[in-house]
Image: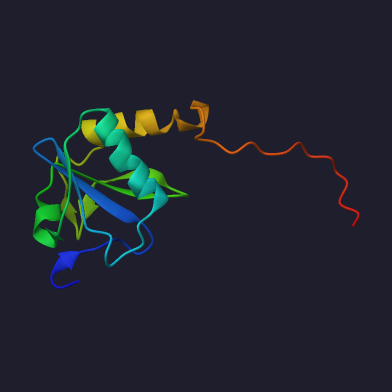
Length: 123
């Protein structure tokens, strides 16, 4: 919007530039739960982060890019518009965030208990 990236077709987007995690404002996209969780985890890991307008050119020049969403969790992006991002592989910040994100179900208050299946659905 207005020359800035807001999101992808169904996910929020992040980039890393010189060790700083960046994501666009959520004023023109869905402020996703996974997006908010990643920002909190970055703080927990002492990864500096900023929420601001980001141009497509900045994403092209980023060290790392990844998307977030309920189904894909944190998914590395290695190319945008055919241009290789960083070294073309998942970056170290993405890897650290994926690792800690995978521990969330084990944390108190971060998972919903699913009731036992009884097989009785007679109403």
